[in-house]
Image (cartoon, rainbow, N blue to C red; front, side):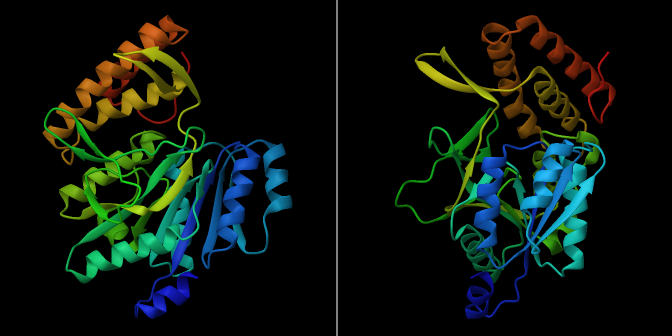
Length: 315
């Protein structure tokens, strides 16, 4: 158990888990709830304006150990996570673990994250957060940990027998364990981003303020990547996960908006530009409705440059 493991290391660690839901797959979310129930953690579920059907389901399945916060409308992932983290303070949390509703931790994940963070802190490193290794729940493929190069991203994939902690520039929010001390110093998530690049912005702010981030190979999280997959030929046959036009809008708009912030380094901009160009080629070239995606991309660039943020508004 987490508390017992912390006592062995002489640490006062109180992990609060914050999971944000929005009309999830109830089977996958029930799997998350089952795993979390085995952990010695406070579990806060922030529902972001889901349907009445899911709220009724949540009321029937949430045990007395689950704290549920119901938001009346979808306020975006950033606002929901900020609300959950603020609630974590009431439980005197020293660390917060963020989860999406389609993420299922492997047993021992939290202990691995805590062990990695405490090891780096004991060496005098100023650690803002550590992150889990994502594994696609469908294909079983692991996502790499990411460093930012001058002309692209560099991914490091953990080997099957490698037990290591890797310094990174970016972490995905689901499976990220955040020090509350770092959170208070760096500040909350930008709610105007609504969804997408919310974690990118927070990580870039952390790095610009002198904090470190690490990926932990032995901390594993099953996660659903993308809304659907397509097969295309790019040098070889590849499976690419794609999102709806509206979700792509947020991804592009917020990337453009990030370029205007002082905390965003030039090397991230240079690495992000080829990614955005690649996204445009894939969606406009291979994903239907092509003109719908192109229209969304153009609108996203325009709104990002103009600073029109917040939830997507249909014309």
